[in-house]
Amino acid sequence: MSRYKAYTQDEYISLMVKFHNKGIPISVATIDMDWHWVKVVEKFGKDAQDKKEGRGVLELFYNITNPGWTGYSWNTDLFPDPKAFLQWLKDHNLKITLNLHPASGCKFYEDAYKDFCSFMGIDPDSKQQIRFDIADKKFMEGYFRFLHHPLEKDGVDFWWIDWQQGTKSRVPGLDPLWALNHYHFIDSARGNKRPLILSRFSGAGSHRYPLGFSGDTAQTWATLAFQPYFTATASNIGYTWWSHDIGGHHFGERDDELYLRWVQFGVFSPIMRLHSTSNEFMGKEPWKYRADVEFFASQSLRFRHRLIPYIYTMNRRCAENGTPLIRPMYYAYPTDERAYNVPNEYFFGSELIACPITEKTDPQNGLAGVKVFIPEGRYTDIFSGRIYNGNREASLYRDEGSIPVLAKEGAIIPLSINDSENDVSNPAELELLVYRGNGSFTLYEDDGETMAYKNGAFCETEFSVSEREKQVVFRIGAVSGDCSVIPESRNYLISMRDLTAAETVEAFVNGEPFPADIVCKQGYVQILVSGITAAQTVEIRCSNVTVLHNDSIKELKTNIISRLQGSNHGKNRFNRLLETDESTTAHSALKGPLSELTALYYSET
Image (cartoon, rainbow, N blue to C red; front, side, top):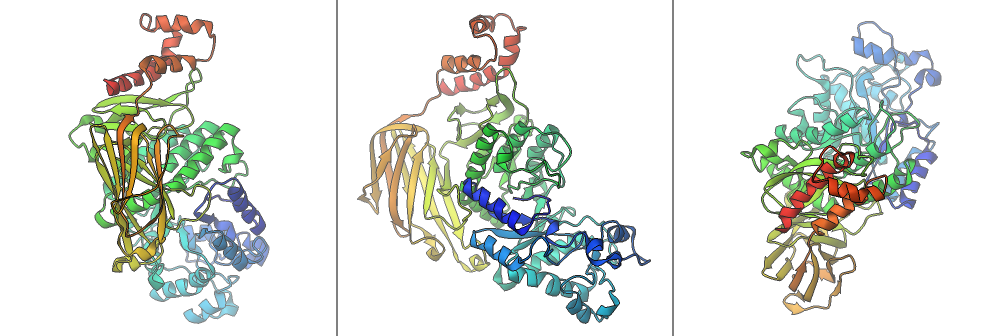
């Protein structure tokens, strides 16, 4: 959760409490630049404006026009007890990042000024500004020791480096942002910690260090439409960790549907980050939108939190072999022209294809579409349950409740049961979404904090599914590796999402029959096995299964026509005219959604 706003300590805590009370989990509490002193002339006098000659244009601009743009000392008018504030966030399972604009160095009113001056050989009584100099080794040593380490000791986990002050330094060709990312990344690894920063893009090659963000996005449909393509193609230069200002940062117009579609895209982005400018009326909290949008946005944010085990495993895969979390379709199908014509479609990890919707719904039918390429094989939408047989292009239409997200046959998707608490530790309960076919998935887990995984402090659990005739078998292997990083035992809820029934369901642990809870209340077969230790294996055998099918074409067609706003009497006439008069208003409203029936029809035949 991020917002450019001058929060007070109590106001920010109240915001976090409201998210908690509404059951919407957050992992990172972001405090934008107003955590430090900003109105420094009002607070500390005109000396806070350093107007000395010999400065570059940008340095003078930020010293004179925005003298409080840089800061390293808590604004105690807003945050009277920073240490208690940080501790409260920690106690509620939140990681903390603070915004950082380092261009103006360190001024006389900063808490660390005297110590930093002593280190640099400057008389603190002179009130001389300690100028930022990325090429000065001594300055950079003091920069971290005096300005950052004390705040990190108090609880700041990582820094949001928001450098906007140009590409020049004393060393020709050295971009200060590139160097800041380099040094901050290295410094953040102190004490065996896993290094992490959020920062702006400073050119190809710099992206080895930070989580990136795409800048201050305009709140428009055109901006949203560009972002799936932008994010997927960033993988072409190995930049796999983009984030966006979900919901739009500034400009544009209020549009609740736009916000919802942006959040739905954000769920299937590398970094899910709500953000907005300081406009009081542009907050991105779900409850600031109409009731239906709040419901679906909150539901989306909860699902994102549940996806952490899956995404974390994909993170490991990316770190080890460079396979991005998000890949354009042409990565897997480089010789198929159709894979290049779907800018809104991409692989999301090894098991899913995400297809964000970035256009407004048709007011006549309440649906919006996205053009997709469905590869060879069977794919099931994890939200709608619709099944598609591939090797075709199609336009898929959805109402505001979801976007198409397709699981391949044999897909296994591990989800945390936790959808409402901030906790991101390795879960004691997992739900496994399983789609019939033949496939496997290896879950990766470590402590999430340190570099100990480099020395083997991680474990892996292999899941597999196989299908033969009318039997589907699912297996959980014994955990391999360092089991100290996971709970001593686990409960597994195995959701066979495309099996509606089975004549027999048997559970075995270490080859012996095991009592399991078997339910079909969600319309699919679910099996709960509890108290499974790392050394145990599990096998679930579903025999004489009934597989999920799409509704009949007639029923789907009827449902689409039923959605039309207007005369109910006229819908029968519209239905008859559809095949004979392509110019009717009804046909223009139905042509897109009905085209999806072609893909569904071939799936059934």
